[in-house]
Length: 280
Image (cartoon, rainbow, N blue to C red; front, side, top):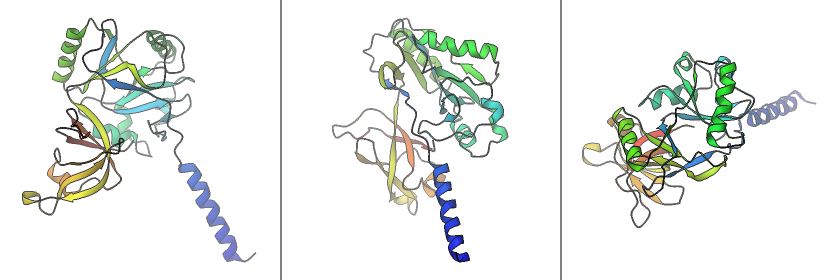
C-alpha cells in the first residue's frame, strides 16, 4: 500500500477516534424546579438557599454538567464520592459564578478547585422521601469524610410569610434565591411541581442568533443581542451589558442567561437584562 494511502487511513482513524472521545454523553435525567407563583401551599415543605454555581451530576463514576459533558475534576475531589448518583452545585461563594465556571469547566484541573465545594441537594437513585435520600448521602460521607462536600441545609417552611422572610435574608446576603421542596414524594426526573424556585426576578436562557449594532454612545459596538428562546420566540436583549461586553459581545451560537419580570402577550420577556454567558 502506498505511503500516502497509509497516512490517509491513519489520519482518518485519528479523526474518528477523536470524534468519539469528544462527544458528550447523553444529558442526565435531572429534576427541574418550577417557578413559584405564591399560590402554592408550601407549609411543611423544606427550603434552602439556591446556590448560583455550576450544576454537577455524579453518576457513580463521573461528574457531568447538566448537558452531559464531563467535568474534569481532580481525582482527589471525586475520590470520596459514592458508587451511587448525586446531584449538587459546584460553588465557592455568592456572586462568584465566573470563577466557578472558569475553574470547573477547564479541561485541565487547576489549583482553583481547592476553593470549590460540592453542595448536594438530591440523591436521585435512592428510594424513599427526600429526607431519606439525603440521609443516604450523609451516611456515606460520615464514613468517607470529604471537607469539600456539603449537604445543603434544609429547614421546614412554616408558610408563605416564613418563606418571604427567608428569601429576604438570602437576598440581603447577596444570594440568588430559594428552593422550596415537598419532602414527601419519591424522586422523579423532569420539571416538577414539587420543587419550586423562588426569586424576585425570574431568569432564563436564550441562544444568540445575531448582533444588532449600537447607536449614539454605543456606535461601533453592540446595541443588542437577537436571542431565540426555547419556545421559538425571538427578541432583542439590549440592557445589562458592560462596556467591555459591548465591545466583545457573546458570539452567535452562544447561550446566555438573562433576568426578567414576566412576559408580554406575545411571549417576550419583560424588563430583560443580561446576566452571563453559559458554558456548561
